[in-house]
Amino acid sequence: MNNYLDSKISIFEQALNTFKDALLENPSQLERDGAIQRFEYCFDLAWKALKRYMEKSGLIDLNSPRSVFAAAYAEGIIGDEIIWSTIILKRNASVHTYNQQLAETLFGELPVYYDAMCVLLAR
Image 1 (cartoon, rainbow, N blue to C red):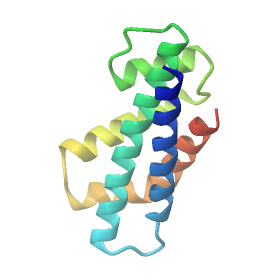
Image 2: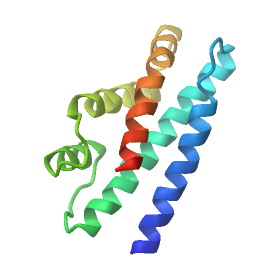
Image 3: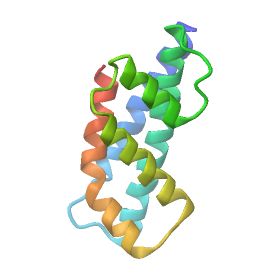
Image 4: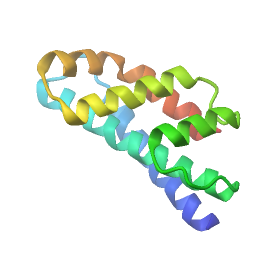
């Protein structure tokens, strides 16, 4: 299980590096959309790696991002429950609804979400 967890964390770290590269100053529409997609898959990798970590610690039956992050907050693994609740909402909105205004707003918020993911990775 430890090698599996290490693999999940390594993949998450690699994805975060590509996410960082996508945070451009004045992106084209295509670059902006690519950055949003990188945010989405980094989020998916983050919660799944965190779920594996929590399972290794004996916390099972965490089957959704919301339950994983709530448990991680309760365990002191993440310190800012509000940012992760916001990230969950933004990720769900970006995946299920697309419009230009949402994309532009979300792109402007991505550096904050990137930073939160880096803090999670460091822990």
